[in-house]
Image (cartoon, rainbow, N blue to C red; front, side):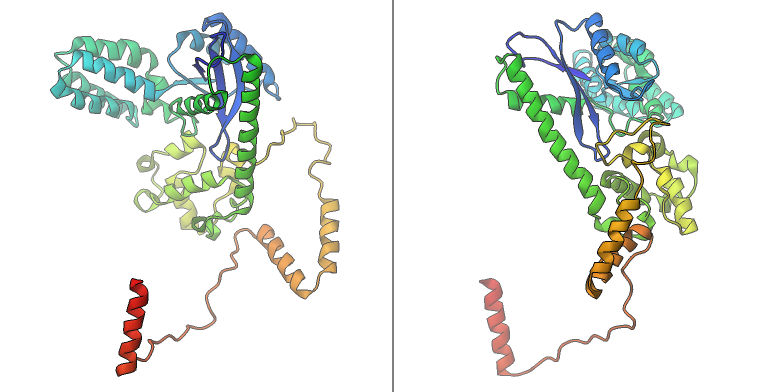
Length: 393
């Protein structure tokens, strides 16, 4: 959530709320023009946002904002179960600016580095060690150190320091860059900041249509396109059922298995807690057992590859998931095909029925290969010369 300015002739701030799809694309959730950025106005917007949720008692697990106290207070009231994280990018930017005011040039780079290490500390022990190092380096700069502690670390460290937010399902979103980019895209469509509400609505509507098309295309790619790195039967239960973005992160995490093995302490399990995906120690157990990754160890977010709304428990009469007609039609089509068509259709059905199997297989016997016979003489030299000319040309 974040506000942007200079979008309309009334000079009202535009408050934009965005989310992230399973394919890691940004989608707009809501826009709100406000008279001013006061707590009561933010409270009104969040109450309206709450009404948009289809299921009762549903709320976002994580809300990412800047350190806007007028916004943070109503978030605690309207969404008490949500975790409000703060944008690391803007925090680091503010701390860097304060460092330039208080610290001499020779030490600024060192202190900036120490601060980043504090922010990225993986656990509370490391956080304490990094903070101690920062305090030692800032012995002569108490004004800067007081600012860092009083403004950021003491009241808000659990909202942006890795030791705490690594336990939160933020899906990789630790800055407000996603909504900042959404602001930029919208302003590109607005063209200027002197339009009325009708012009602003048209730009928003066009923006939403583009987003919708891109998201649907990304869902289709996850359904039907398989990247080379995910051909292995190890991903059999996941292909076509989770997004390709999730598969890429799992493939990257798989590279750590040789080092981590099944040791949870070495692993840290950040991918599990922050992304809802199997971490290195979990993948190590799958590789040792020689079995494919189960679909149920992947968070439901990454399995959302459709625009359809999930029905509440008890609301489904069975017709939504019944496949009797489809299976009958498939049999009719199969019987009407010739032998070649039947083989092709059977191959496609087998890919769905047996996802852990692969059509790739080694040749029945080792192929004998040998180098070409080298020809000596004038003709061979001429051929080589002509070939060289062709390459050069």
